[in-house]
Length: 331
Image (cartoon, rainbow, N blue to C red; front, side, top):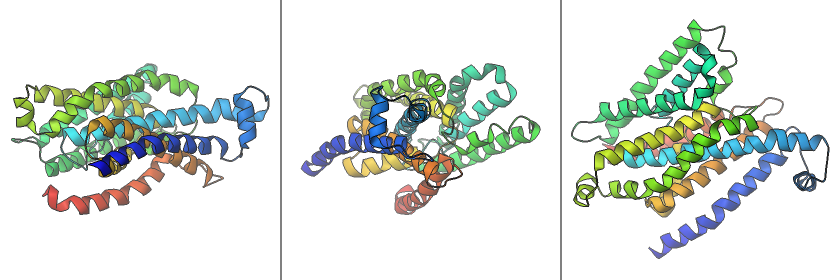
């Protein structure tokens, strides 16, 4: 217990420092490297140069969007893993992100006049998908194996529908293709203003989700004995997870594995107490997405790799390892 408390204290110190360092790296590195002294001068308003445009108009909003996307996905994954009692639950793997992505694509391709409703439509798609998966897996309880299998099936179905939309509206999807891979290319202050209200509302609501999430860890029977309305709380947590996933998808596209990798690593270090798991996962998810985006933007020059592809390369082996490690428990 003492060791776990020390780890919590250490992460409380190290994670914000890590986020600050990767944000600094993402701002100063790229096709044009910016000296730290020039960055400080621009931030102080002492330098009017091309650096100012790059820093203020391009890189800072992109970093802030990446922070919100990573925090939302990691928090969504942490909530889904608790609600579904499944360490493999993730908005991308079980299809929640795909549901939000399909709804967002329908809005962008078929109803572009309602593009200002993109976060709301993405949330609705993510929420309906999460409910369908949970309902399909429910039979005197939702087993981890059934949730994964239902999620894979729903994910495949949503992928087929998305591909069908792309074929039917092939003349309109060219601008949407990078979004499907998941990326932050071209994200600006406009995109930050676009998603921030939904993302911040969801992240603030996570503070109120800590107690019910912890009570659900005790098991349904124990939670009921403590006077909790288990199914209502589970439903509300799924709604919150869908809101977070939808907010991220609406701007960054189908970015996967953040909600799997980050909460699971944090859980291994400090345990399942959501008082620590949720805020630490938010910071860790923000740091992971910002760092991965910095690498995707600068290491593959002259092309810019979508961050979703890079995160899939990182996350897929981790998922296979986790599936192997947890296999006996899941069955």
